[in-house]
Length: 245
Image 1 (cartoon, helix red, strand yellow):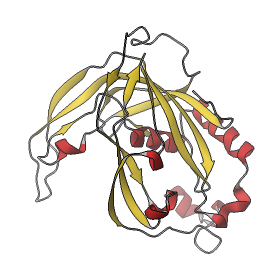
Image 2: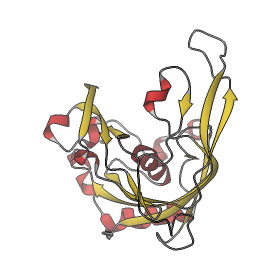
Image 3: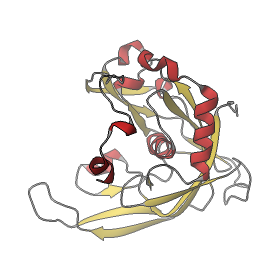
């Protein structure tokens, strides 16, 4: 597996996780995939460190604990008011090692002066050491996660000696928003990606890049938000009341 020079490696864990299969959401119930989705891991990585100058590419995940599920009765809010009864199936006692790297976002030429690979890599590694800049969630806000630094591949995993491989078939991969679109046909669009190469070997799943996914669905037109001197303020420009809020 290729390791990029601006790679970060971290371990993320929690009591529960819910990487929901979109097919199960139609009836109000939610059932988790047995493995984390690319989009969920990308969201965790962006919670560790994100700036519009860069975009994260998740290379691989290593499943450290045996896959277990638990079904719970919950009472989510009903869009018509009140609550309703539903059953959610969660993953239980999860722990993963993640390897990801960043690339500069070609859709943001206005931030070209911020394309300092060494700076962003050092900040990202420091944020891994500190457990991330924002709260970590394992697929949904109900499932709190925690991040620690690790060396990908080190330590004992429950699937290290698993013979053969497990194929997970056709799966949801993630969403490509307009600001990270690479392919010409995805420009100024929101695109949902699916893939059928999800295979676990010795506990490791290697991801394809979003633009390499074999099946795509265009959801809607989108514009790219521009970042520049005219639409954001530095911290020193905020009042004490705004900062305290």
